[in-house]
Length: 314
Length: 261
Image 1 (cartoon, rainbow over the protein chains, first blue to last red):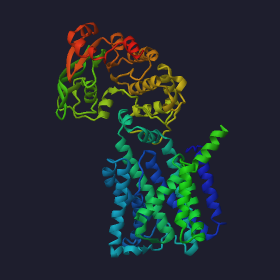
Image 2: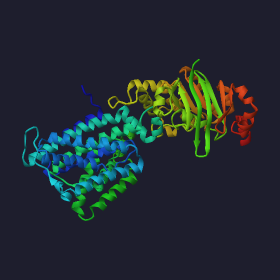
Image 3: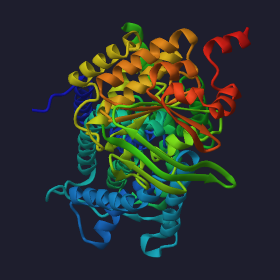
Image 4: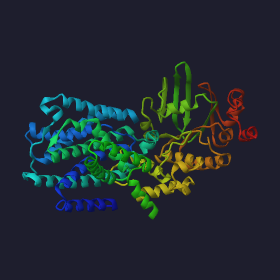
């Protein structure tokens, strides 16, 4: 039987609270939470790579592939089941990552960051030039069913929220295990001293390749749920500012705990919502100040507040 | 005894500079071989070529009778030959325990599992044994960057030995280590390599260390081996006296202390 550790019990409890709150929270808040959790999955993809010392400024590539797979699956392949569409997004994303990863894992530092950004911008350019995909406007996602059941209107949004919470919870538990595993430890070791890892008889490149595929897969899940929740996809998903947002959230939360990207993504969504409300023309400035404050006062992200309290208690 | 490492006509050039010229070396299993030479003599180039870090320009390297030229570093490590570094190569922001745990994970196979936890009971127990063997248990939970240089060297060598190699190459094991620490450090290392039955080849500038711990010396000068034999023979060689020891790189500790004073 699956034995859960303390972190995993917290994750399950948090997921249950979110699920219970779905029936109490206003629709707009459930919608924001759905998008925040979906985004957090992409951020997890960024964080996995950050833990091994690589910063992806192009994770929007896989976010976009996940989203467009959902849209295109419905529009061109006549697939309407949400589970099949999400699986299609993951398969497409991992397939693309399997090819790109061979190139990407040869690069480190700024070269990796810039190359990842360049690849996502190539996809952006391809979509923008494609009239069949709606060019810069994108296109709407067809209504989806869930194993044959097709709820209508707000019910569908609620089902997508529930699914997002369950899937995000499952992925978070898997990531927690990954982070604490032997392989997770080696990832941190690669960040600290890749040469030593090589001289221990391991291949940092293939470990980074596995990370890249894993990150692509979960980022595609995030993109797929975003497309399902909003009912629309557009090339902005692959634009550099979207990828920058994922890095922003990763820095906001920190990389030391699996819960950090979720907390940061929710906080980011709320800050942005209220910043937009308060200052519609300068909300980016407010986000900029938030990031500046995090970098100056909490260089290891929001999670360092929790970690610091734990250390003090110990 | 059988030959564990053999190089035949090994050459390496960097542009116009020849760092290794026609190196023909045979190391027998169980030997402790010291490599001496002034800076730029080709000692580290030799180690780098043997461990696959640097490809030779020409020549052959045989480990246990099989060619290892063209093999990657990790293939050579997995075949049973490993090395430590002049500057200890550790994971500086991790604890000493975690460093050893990572090395233990690596020793279990080339594909680390994502299922079992890094800190399994069996791995921690084994890491504690290693800490005790190398007399660094007091640093168990310390972050590596806060550990003294001598202890870092020991941890570096301990990590190299975790994979149960049959041959260990040490690049200046006592460099950066205080005069008081160097003999206890080498005693600990030599005890461990004897226990693990490992053939050792080490580069060292300190002649006292070489004299005390090796059974054979290879003296390098300008990419060539100018003398090979037991320490008494090599140190008595006029060429070695003039080109290696005379350069000041092989001064004994007392000489160093005298010049420092």
